[in-house]
Length: 132
Image (cartoon, rainbow, N blue to C red; front, side, top):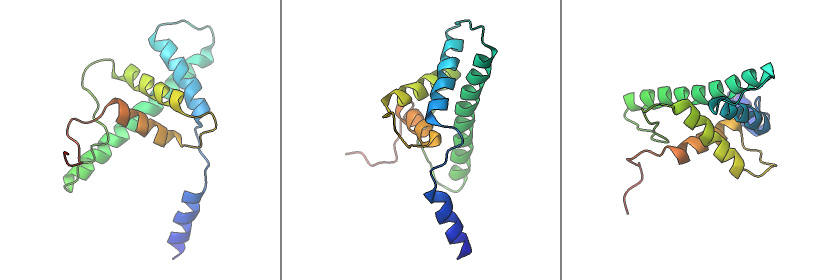
């Protein structure tokens, strides 16, 4: 029973370690990096790296989850990343596009925002939903 209370407490809080605004600023810095726009502010490199690392880490974490789920007979299929080049820049652009569609006072977590961005930008060819 005490574990149930702990889970309820964790799910009821809306504290995010990485806010949507921070993600936006960091990903804008990353986009500038990909467009080879030079900046004299060394902090821009840190911001860019934080966005790229967060989004790539999210995608890698999902890939591991998908792989493990498949081992027990489940195919998640939330998104399917392409294998061609320049994926990192495409991931950042997908997240920025999703951030642009969010209302300014959105309380969505960055994880849910990134998941939504990748699912919309990189849908899997074979869906789990039945064909109509």
